[in-house]
Image 1: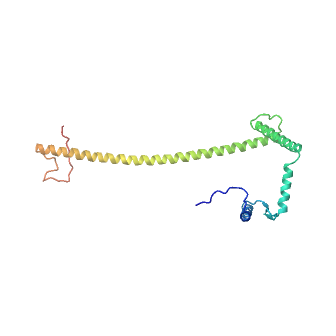
Image 2: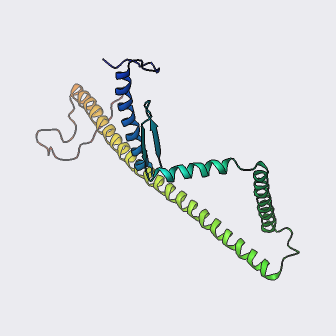
Image 3: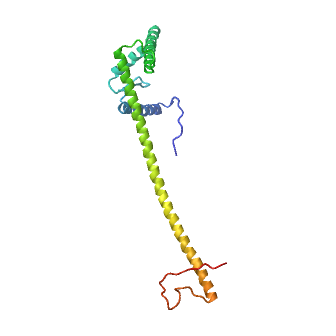
Length: 218
């Protein structure tokens, strides 16, 4: 049977409390070491027992972890006015980048070219040629892929057509043989009833000669 659910509350028995503390402390330190090794993280754990005894574990040094913690905490608790100025600068940079991208897009579309020099126009032309070349290469690749796919489909359809033609010829041959058997038996019965034996079926004639069949009237 599985272990029952443990209620998370203070253990009254001092012996059980000490045993649980020892087990849980070792497990927590083990997990901290595994986390530092597996994830390349800087980990620091400090534990004080109920008697005031200190247990610690760190991936580098506890002083380094504590100093990094206080430094990071101070950076997050900086002056609100300085934080506002920082985001204002970021917004201004993003607006400038957006304006530059819009201007470049208009120039690529052939607009607002009056203020450009001959060198700038030449660079713009080179960019357009590179873009057109890349587009054509991509288009050619797509068309080649489609042609290859259609060729494979054509070969498959041709093979299927050949197989169907063979089956059709086989059915025709079987139909001809069946008709020869059916009409041949009917002619023999008619000839026997009339006392007539078709040419080539007599005892004194060549049995390997051609057989002339005559259709009987219904």
